[in-house]
Image 1 (cartoon, one colour):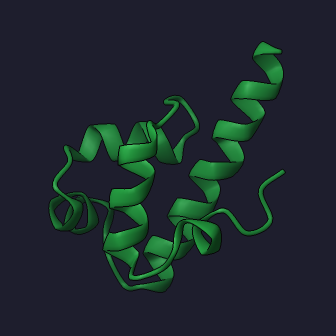
Image 2 (spheres, rainbow, N blue to C red):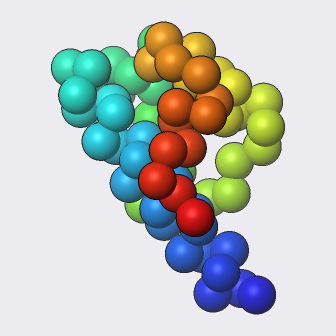
Length: 75
């Protein structure tokens, strides 16, 4: 179960990084944009953190997409 969780977090982090870069944000700029610390965002992108639903919603809103769009391709 722990491996599934870390694999899911890693895939989610990769997706965040992909969409952030596509939107033209640096990690620091995007963290400021969504109101979180850059080290927390970095931990999310590396799959080291398991975000809450509130954080997932903030990320999606910051990217101008829905939560379902944010999680496309993550299984």
